[in-house]
Length: 147
Image (cartoon, rainbow, N blue to C red):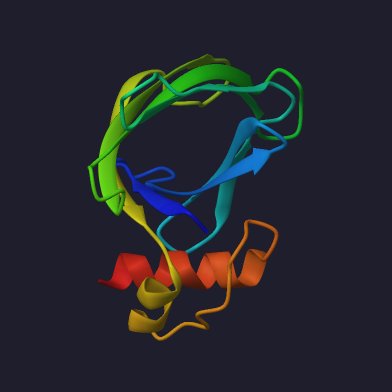
C-alpha cells in the first residue's frame, strides 16, 4: 500500500492509494472507505492517466469511477498529489464531476505513506499490502480511524 488519503468529510473520509509503474507508465488506483472500513468507491473504472511534471514532487491523475448499481452513478475526476521532499507525506486535492451522490467540486486531502514500519506501528502484518487484500485494507482503515 502506498498511502492513505484523509479527507475531512463524513462520507468516505479515507482512501487507500496505490502507485504502480507498469512498463514505463505510472498507474494509480484507489478506494474510499467509511470510518468503519466499509468500501465506498473504487477508481479508476476504465480511464487511468497520470502525468508527473519534470522536477516537481507532484502527480496529476485523471480517472473515472462508477459506484452504486447502475451506470448512471459515474464520475470523472482529476487528482493532484503534492508530495513533501521526504515523500512520506503530502497533500493535494481532487476535482470530480458526476451523477448520483458523488461529492462534487474541489476536495482537499492529506496524504500519508503506509509502509511496513507504519503497518507494524499499528499492530498489523507488515508484509506488503495491496488493494486486492480487502480484509487487511478494511482493518487498516479501522485502526487509522481509531488514532
